[in-house]
Length: 97
Image (cartoon, rainbow, N blue to C red):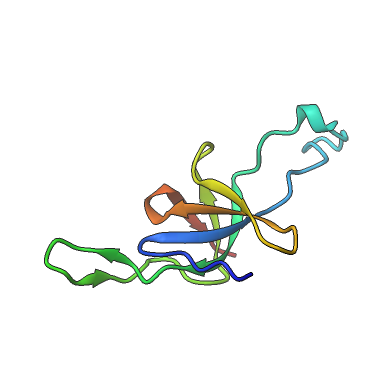
């Protein structure tokens, strides 16, 4: 089953939480914060404006982004992979290297 986001929504693959602190201490699962970084797997066709035109998404497939802590909806595909579907406006920033 393929998941294709509609409108201004994006399909994200959440990146794993860090298992080690900056000081080198390993963190147990209960102490790890919910990760807020994800890789964009697919983006919808864009937001529908009042005049009927579409505004292209500002992000693209392959971008690594930061998103709001409680944003989006978790979905699981037929292969058991878990993704997050969120609105483009829930994305706070694109991480550049």
